[in-house]
Amino acid sequence: MDPYRTNKVTHSILEVLGELLQSHVKDPRVGFVTLGGVKLNRDHSVAEVYFSVMGEGANPQESLLGLKKARGFLQARLGKTLGMRTTPELRFVYDESLTRGEELDVLLKDLKGKGEFLTDAEKKKQMCLDDLQPPKLLLTALRLAKVVWVVPHHNPDPDAMGSALALGEALAAMGRQVRVLGYPDAPIGLLDMPGFEYLLNSDDAPAAFTADPPDTVVLVDCHRIDRTGPLEETLARCETRLAVDHHIVSGRRAPEPGWIESRACSTCTLLYQVISELAKGDRVDDDDTDGDAPFEMTVDMATNLYAGLVNDTGGFRFDNTAPFSFELARRLSAMGVDTAQVAAQTLHRYRRAGIELMQRVLATFQWYDQGRILALHATRAMLEETRGSMTDTEGFVNIATAVDGVRYVIFLKETGDDTWRASLRVRGEGDVQAVAARYGGGGHRAAAGCTIEGELNAVVDDLVAQLAAMSR
Ligand SMILES: [Mn+2]
Image (cartoon, rainbow, N blue to C red):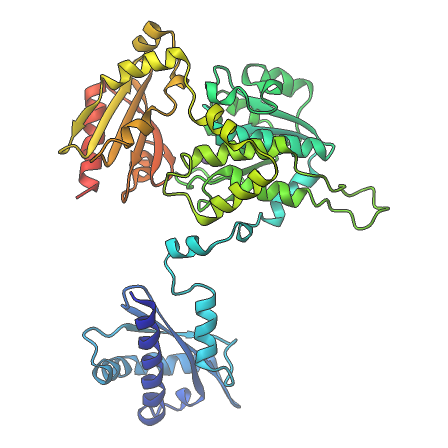
């Protein structure tokens, strides 16, 4: 609804209700009532009417009963007076913060200032980078940690790895004992990220844990340990686990505490804010040696953060890109990040085996639903022929989403006998996260993944049917 119209309607409702209460409702309990404001829901089917009670003998509960009794009458008269086709359902809400002196205009201005009349998309457009602030609890927990493992999700992308490496370096700058975890068979895009060579490989993690157990585990770009594949069992041995993530929370298992903010375009966006806060230190004065000294964010940290930002926004092409994405890009670039090199090394880079694999995957493209759905797949046989790996398929899905007329993309990667890792994408409206969640997967509205068992054609048919149903 047009915010101007909503504003006008709430004004009118308040005016008419005020008059009706004064002149037509004789219930003594209502005599103390002052109306403070009206809030309409988006389709104007419900109006919350805020009231306070004034004067000696005022009793909010009693007044509310009186208002509820008069509701039918008020609603009917309101509709008639304002000539509304459908009158919003009135819900009375007691609000003690309202006082007689508060003008409605002030209230409305306040609501407007808080963005009450804006859609989520409009709010995101207005957000600044510094509107994203890490919870105090997360910062405190990070400061309390002494031996820390920073862990990206299994099959890490540059956002997961950039987050882990940047946070690892920051915690090391604070004098913490830090290990950043990695997995075997990393995609080529990760190899040149600063600090990549120091990763603790997941194969060595169980022994390392026994030798020198961490007191804190920080998951990045994921919020549950079951997303860390081979590390899950080891990480479960550490009781203090935190998460910084921008994925949508779904499924029954609770996320680890920390900071989960799905409006962020990348987890690196969140980590930039976390590291900026940590970098301030927490010493009370110069003699305070208990607290952490301030430190500077290094170009290496910034480079890793930029890698996550540029990859998760698809080079600022995906619709998760917001004004604050460019704000972060500007800050990181100004710090000295070689943005062209990061993009070349992490975003647009293929091994020769990867290109040979691409030739085979391109040959599997199949169009469904009048060209709106495109399915493709990579098999283990293709990997053998090309001596490539599944990590070489990074980015293939973006080629598919760039095909004119295609709305949904299904990319299936064979991970075992009749077992497929599905990457789902939607361009424009639609929610592939909801489909992935049905198979126990998850992700974002426009990009999600899950594992599905079954014969290839049956799996494709299932997914096509669900996506086609969604676009109707
Ligand atoms: Mn991410």
